[in-house]
Image (tube, rainbow, N blue to C red; front, side, top):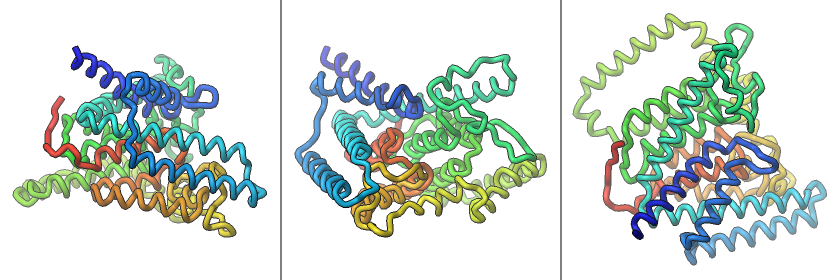
Length: 394
């Protein structure tokens, strides 16, 4: 009976956490569907007695609260550009996410639910891929198939899914997310956990193939680049010994791949030139705003007059880069704290650590649920507390 009871609650919790990630762009009132879902999860954890934060974690959280409180007080007293209500709202939101991520980390790791959690996330990821494919077909059908209901709580404007540079025009896949790059961010998170987790957990390769193909169909430059990075890291770490033993097979595979790419390029040369080659040039010439902003533009809001404490919590406009966000809002102290977190992830898992750094240049918003769920997954699968290596096939 206890085992059935535990299975019910663990299934419910893992399902709701996975659901919250894919609903992170859906808005209802002041909050996202993700925040509502996570609020219900934390309430159920408390009610069922499964909410737990260790003494060491409490000390860390209290330290963060003290730092942020002092930070708020200093800005309120000495920064004329600081809006106290905005700062307090950001403070409450940040504390909400820290408590949720900490408690969910404890629940999943202590109950040995890593495998099940990875399964749930892959199932949800493939579900969003299927929805994305359906939406693309529906758009091309020009009204024959309905799809607008998927976007009722998020964007529906043409610029969020149509690529048009005056020469070529096509639909970019974004599924139920607000734009293709955000969809790619989510899919890349799941793909990297499949490939780079510290426990050598493996899902059926078909899941990763579906996710990878869908990332390509987002036509998001950053998402595709990160997908190749995580795939390459997986091949050269997990498959290193296989590569050494099968050099001829690998060489043949590379030749076949190059031939396929050459054929595709010959058939769709205009497409490749405008979507990839020209966009690469544009990123470094400040023509492509989103690409340039990810690499360089996000640092423009750094407060040089108050580099120690920044602009204040929640006072930097929307930018792409989390590291730039930290120094812009929280100053050197905030950036130093986030760098320490990054270093700790690298120490646990070098591949996931590198992936973590690159992903934080692709999508900003440290006050968004998608960032904290990405952080939760990264921390869970970068550690190796479950000593037995296991494979899972579904």
